[in-house]
Image (tube, rainbow, N blue to C red; front, side, top):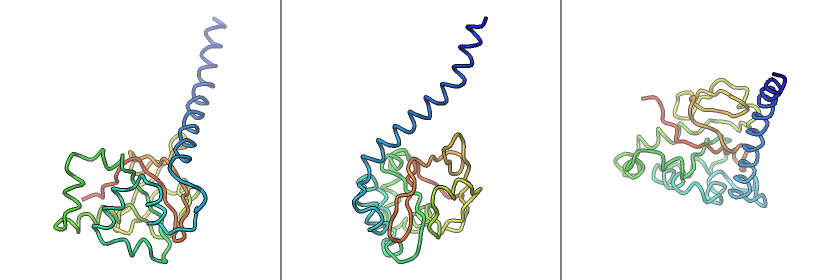
Length: 179
């Protein structure tokens, strides 16, 4: 009986530690692969995203929506940036449809739903319940087991990527504004 109780206690204590260590290792690997530190904070949001080589779909969408000048501008912004893998999760044909000129207004609504005015670091985001986007609607924020979630289902997978005009936080899904 003592062995069973000891095993249960060990599992309760060690499993969360192992999961936390695995997550930290994945995050550290992700950080090393995605961004170089030699230009950290010396490029604007667009240049920083372009240098990461994992936001090509996001950059194409920003260009199609004519938002490059805004995100290269002097204002301070916080961008929740979906990766190419995040865009790939959308239903087949969605990205291609959104990139068409006749869908520019919808694309702008979606992209501006990923941007918050001001330079908000992860430590502050973790204490927030919601954030007002440039699109005009709120993103709901909650933290579970040390992970920041947006709207309950989009995970923040990398934080505090510095740029001269704000901060990028990498997310694993495209946020869709409530219609």
